[in-house]
Length: 461
Image 1 (cartoon, rainbow, N blue to C red):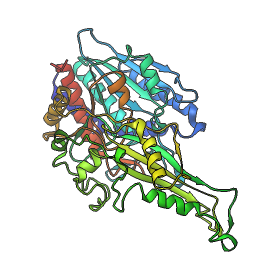
Image 2 (cartoon, one colour):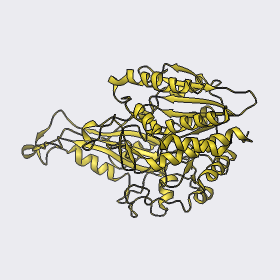
Image 3 (cartoon, rainbow, N blue to C red):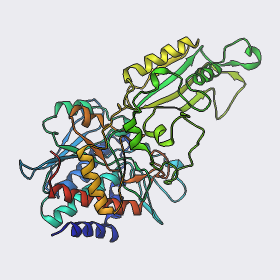
Image 4 (cartoon, rainbow, N blue to C red):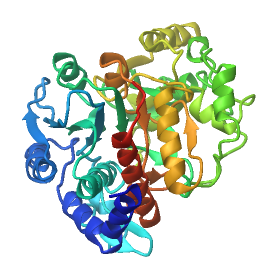
């Protein structure tokens, strides 16, 4: 039995429609972790969809309550073949972002998989049900072909990633021995370009907070009180304008990292940012001295996610009592996360905006992580992918987005290699989320080849 047969087996799984059928089953679980009413659905996904599927592959599965009250459960599965074999840890999340059912275009529904041309629409198709389904199916193809994996495999499926993975760090600290491994190889996020496999080894961190100006009780007539009462929206807008300049360049010194070193620049040089299924980038936005790849993967970015003052959908002639902006800093290794809010406080005070209150979110942030592209595990994965796809993958030290990679890198001390199976135009976290059929088929082959090579050895140890 050969590597080629395993890859042929997984290609047949896609071509005869079984992948689409399996993804349809997973998408139908309404696993919105942001919706407390769907808490039971999170457990049902792990019990009925994951544990049953993994059990057929010889995995022993345990579903654990989350150490954080009211947070979603965590599945740990293990297939142990021999003490002297390497152990691979992999990961996925079964929860999805809010459905936004009323915003999907006609003919689509978040929890019904719909195939149109080269797209498969459905909530979780890209983030992350389709991605961990691809990896599970690839493991199955190797088992069917070789009769064994040739390595030990541990898998974690959580149900709270979309709300910041509450309890995951505590769970990992309490179960370090049960989760020990040689490497994390997992899938989430997008490829840089849909036609080219991608590897990244860490993520930018993310810290979300509200800036609030709360001046009085109730709004007051703008004719009677205009020019007499301070306008919270104006104060907040002016405060926000001090954080960056007109092209979005960050002005707070502590938010400007010093970790964009020559080796990171070398890793990012030549990576294609334009295209890939997303909108056209704005060349005159962000740090002027950096390339687009350096801005996305090697630098920090500040964004205003939402703003509100008064009644935007039904304005009235009144000066509002308060204004609020939800903001986010995406940050790379080299930024002290403990100093993000204090440095903002110092900056706002120095600019005369003592009335602007900072309210950090209790959940919804991940620390920054990064691993060198020269690491032996990265090189092993890259060689395997090139052998399967016939092209070198795009490799970069960290994703522009955020994931709970710190629990693997910092708590378990693992090298972390992520092989994403989506693309940047997939509309994750938005209506009309979808995956591309060609990317899914290619990813199935890539992962079957990679899992075959992991069992063929030798692996980095």
